[in-house]
Length: 76
Image (cartoon, rainbow, N blue to C red; front, side, top):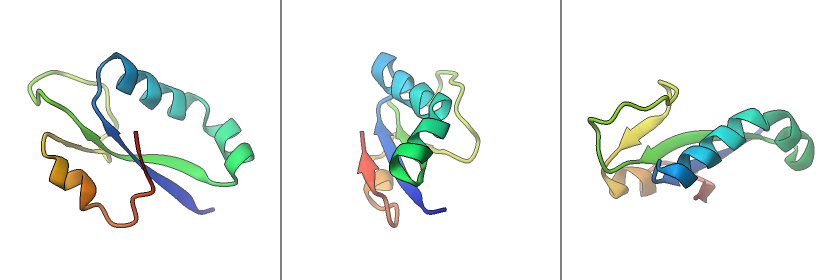
């Protein structure tokens, strides 16, 4: 199955909500889109703040890291 690669700009109330929704609705997204939606990166402001983010997700304070991800499909 092909993958839609997603990055989030921010992990406040909205960003964390989008992150949770994508994870909790993966089955419905697969049915609707015919593809898996994978969050590959998140732009944050404070690296010292503790967050519950999968270890395979790039967490960065540098926007350039996000736009340099190969084959990135969507930025929220």
